[in-house]
Amino acid sequence: MRVLLYRGDGQIGQWAEDLARALPGVETLGWQEGETLVPCDYALVWNPAPGLLSQLADVKAIFLMGAGVDAILKFGDALPAVPIVRLGDAGMAVQMAEYVAYATLRYFRRFDEYEEQARHGLWAPLPEYEKQAFTIGVMGLGKLGLRVAETMRGFGFPVRGWSRTPKEVPSVDCFAGMESLDAFLSGTRVLVSLLPLTLDTNNLLDRRRMSTLPKGAYLINVARGAQVAEPDLLALIRAGHIAGATLDVFRNEPLPAPHPFWDEPRITITPHISALTVRADAVRQIALKIAAFEAGYPVDDVVDRNLGY
Ligand code: NAP
Ligand code: GLV
Image (tube, rainbow, N blue to C red; front, side, top):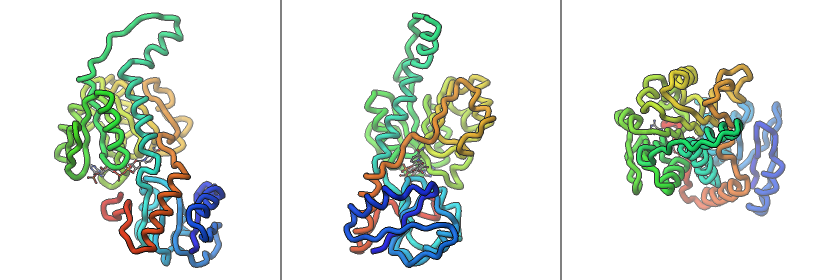
């Protein structure tokens, strides 16, 4: 079996070694811009170049080395008509839970304010927030959002979730569909996005929707930056409606040097690291999925191109 490996950053050496261990007998190969690809059974890619995609029409499936699919679906009709399979959790859900727990507890326990006080040698306990009024609202109850919702529920926070189709999750107040979005937002103190970036979620968090959050709400965006109207977020923070934001993703990455987010102390910035691909877990999952394809079994996490995720 021949498998093509390609990453936009060129780092495929370890992937090739891990895949050879997981699928004995596999032949892995790379690709450089301008080359003609020899026929392959499968492709494993991240941020593929258009010149490569046009040569993948005969593979049995394209596997992604990440969870998000927006960077490949943007090629639209130029994509070969073969199944595209993304990672399903593969070690990312626990990282998302860690990140969201850290950011939420920092706000809820006022740790950032204590850090600031300590810098000034100040010993001054602050009034505590009431936990039952600190509702966590998770947008997207998929592989990652569900784990985040369950983790925050474990800390005793009231948790609500919003998805496209109706869900039942124990001890999580579930909302579904656009018609319930305002009701979901109006009772959310910490809004977490774990939605895929699609035509429906692009700019979803605009000024009107973020104003529906109660005054003093926080935003944690760990999904994709283009879901948030950035100037609207800045305006709502400056107006005091949104108390702070922890952002891991941005419309343009890396976040450009002159961007106003850098100068806003109530915005915490991380460089798209909330959940990194764990190569060993990813390779194990992809090897199992390849074995399922070869045996003719159904495979999880096949992307629905119509839905965009
Ligand atoms: P997933 O399993 O596909 O879950 C997506 C969830 O979003 C589902 O619950 C889905 O609803 C919901 N959804 C989709 N469109 C919606 C809409 N229009 N309205 C309401 N809900 C909608 O995805 P995942 O694996 O959890 O990953 C989520 C996203 O996280 C990825 O797409 C990626 O962009 C991002 N991510 C970021 C990082 C990072 O490091 N920052 C790392 C990994 C992933 P249904 O359940 O009803 O289908
Ligand atoms: C990272 O952002 C991913 O989608 O895996």
